[in-house]
Figure 1 (cartoon, rainbow, N blue to C red):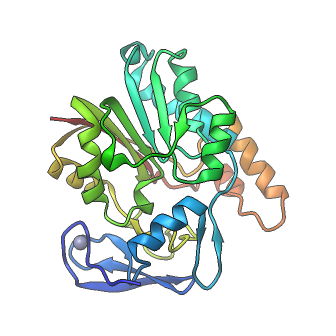
Figure 2: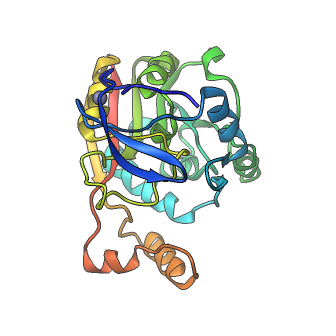
Length: 277
Ligand SMILES: [Zn+2]
């Protein structure tokens, strides 16, 4: 375990926010970032991401399942960002932490295979499944990677990173000049601990940020913000609603169906579209 300070503003001043799985989530007194402290050391985190297992009071399995509803949500976002998608033709795209490849699948479909897309995924089971589905996915060390891309996406990756500003500083070297980054994460650090989505999945998730924190980090890293898109925790797509309905039928699963029907879901799923200067 190691003690850390706020990666956004450098402050060590913090207050207790929540406890889960024998880990403490603390709130930075200066910028409001929520982060786990103390946290597993970097080697433990890397190993956990390869195996999809995090140890705490309980062993958390994070390998999960291929989520068919994500493909429709991603397609909706791609349409809002890129219209008919013609600007993407022939572009090289790297999806970092691509999981089972739901986003790559949406991207290939959306662009009618016009994008040269590949994914990198540390979880061996997820990467194998994505390859089985015909996607160009493997695992390689990004710090030694020499290829350049027009687009990089990191979806549901941010909260898992020990030090997002440092790693974004590394990964931007993989972008061509003027290249774009699509970063998806929650906009939740301004919520109270009562209203924050739970479970937190500590220590698989190491921090929770806000629109202000993420856009500031990207601007400091040399990006212009082109747009911020926010969605409810569950999209109103038929597939997403179907998935929540299925979860409502399975004992022990948390379904957001009722809150979806009541219109009670918060717009906390955030996509930031940024361009490297
Ligand atoms: Zn801070």
